[in-house]
Every structure is written in C-alpha cells, then in structure tokens.
Length: 217
Image (spheres, rainbow, N blue to C red):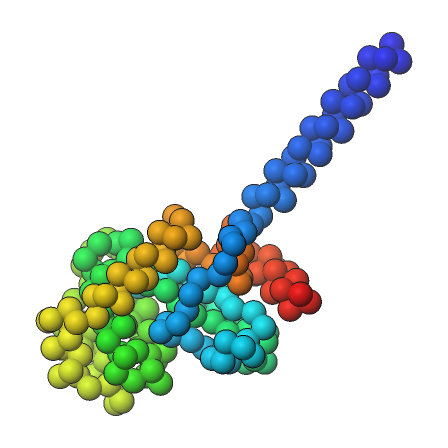
C-alpha cells in the first residue's frame, strides 16, 4: 500500500511539473535575435545603442485585434515605458488580409519615407477609419487613404497618390513580409520584446514582466 501511495504521489508530482514546464514554455518563444528595425517607424529613443529594450508589433491595418491592441495596450506601454525612454517601439507591416493590407502598407511606407514625423499621425488615423463591424468589407481604398492623408498637413498628397499608383514602396513592404516569415508570425498583432515573442499580446502584465527582465539584463 505504501509503495502504491509513493508511486501515485510521484506520478502526480511529475504531472504537475510537466504542466508547469509546459506553461512556462508556452508563455514565450525566444529567438536568436530580434527583428531588424532599420528603416522601420520608431517611437521613443531611436538611437539603437541607447535603447535598452525594443518592443515590436507585427500588425495589419485591416486587423480588428490590432486596432483594439492600439486602443487598449499601447497607451499603457507608452505611458509606462516609451515616454520614459526605457523602451523604443516599432511597427512592422504584416499584410495578412490581402490587397487592402498591402495597399495600406504601401501608403504607410510612403508616408514614412516622405516625412517620418507624419508617420504615426497617419498610422493612427488610418486605424481609426477601420469600421467597427463587417471587417471583411472593402474599406482600404486609394480614395480613403488620400482622405486620411489630406487631414495631415505635412503629407504631400500628390506624391502619395503617385507612389500608390506606381507601388514605389513595394520593396519596403516585401522587406516586412520577409521579417514576418523569419519570425514565423502566425497572427496579428504579434508582439516581441527584444528577441522574445509574447504568447498573448493582450496580457499587459506579461509584456511588462518581459520588459522588466530585459531592463535588468
């Protein structure tokens, strides 16, 4: 009877350990390097040598979850870490929703190249145009992009329209797609803290914990 109890206890403890180990492994995925954000839009300290932690969002302007993340999690991140210059934030286009996503990415890349200071205003304004329902309906059009851009005085509308027509920034979009593939991004938004992919992008406590760990080195 004692032997049976001991064996049962060992099996139980082994099961608990396996669950804990599995949960630890599922909380994050670590890569050998972090995404290269050279040429990407950056908020916060943009000097790579001085930035202690880099947070990257793989996002899609057509993605409802990305809009929700930007409205709920991102303000907390900004207040706690970006404004304090402990973290720099970058956004990588992840065009999972077809031609509309690609068009939005082309527009964002064009604005970034034309006037980096206007990028985040355009980024936020385009997300704000995302409808609250019927997300599969077409809403990212050249007319909508120009309408959004026209509200930002520092964007050259004619230059933007020509760039969209000629797809002059397609190589920049393709560069982002390569990063999406390199880091095996399966969903949007996907959030990385340095070289660590967060399992749940809406778990702000997990993001904070990873940032604090990286700040401590």
